[in-house]
Length: 425
Image 1 (cartoon, helix red, strand yellow):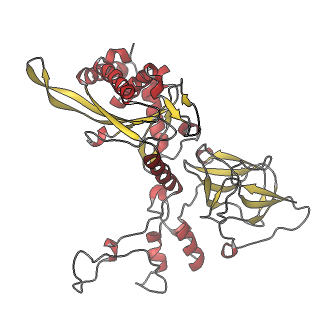
Image 2 (cartoon, rainbow, N blue to C red):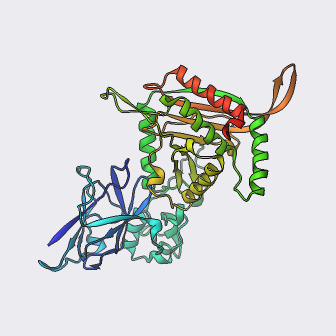
Image 3 (tube, rainbow, N blue to C red):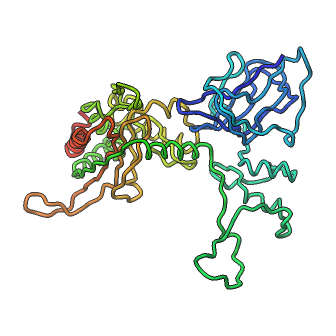
């Protein structure tokens, strides 16, 4: 008798999943705890484990295929009714794109674990690369991936596909050169300088979709403030000297901003809120202050969340922020560590950016964009002196946050930055 294995819901924002790699093939014996398949979601790559034994009788969605939550992706046979039905990659069915009800995987069939729970190596390749590997009988274990996270991309196959020079029979169209800017002079353009088609990861496609929806659907407005950060910088220097002497980790300007924002949100809870839709007569005000920190990881933008940031000390915030950033760069964040945020901070100050605006991360109601902390000529009394100053811009959802509320929040944040001893009180 066959059991359907369906695409599970692996995160609160997930609507569909992509099959990255099948670890079992039709006819393979499956034992409890065996990894069946890697699934790429909007937030992470997860392993799909079996907790019922049987034989994988059929793969319904091949590698590279994307299906909605609840769609069957494979059949697991207990071996009592019929023999397994072998299949090859060349005859694997095409990915299913028809809508399916949002549901978790069938009960009692499988469980899902994070990728970092097991240590076995894996080969990541784009769907185009996998298709070419099948068509030309290529061994991907011989290929060094140069894409994000070691992913094998189209150009990595050039040597295997074309060892002795260009061949129209092997090359697939992947680039074009625009000559619209200048007339053709008869010079052949080096293919290495041509445009290249790069496969977007599942995470990047979801980021694009969600931020596009945010920019189109949420009525953003922006409020900018400037704070005198001279005392904040001095306090950080003094604190770090004491922390190092005590064996504690140093704190950054961003850690101080997280603390200041958390306290300001506690003072203005209606900024720490979510809009529930045009049909809803209520909005959700969050009494837990869970701050997401945007991280430009090697594999793309991620937003790990510091839970109950207003209840943690500066040293605790510093340690947790560094741990989350390290996990983000190694693709080791769990779903829990990227869920539950109520407010986000995006800091580009370390890149020398003076000021910018950010797009709200739904379903949150606001996001704070922070620029560099730099010395500027400042009027103090009747004298112009160099002092550290910081600019930050609040992007707010005008459906639930008005201009006066946003301004009051920034005023409180500015006061905390200019009177930094309140951050350690």
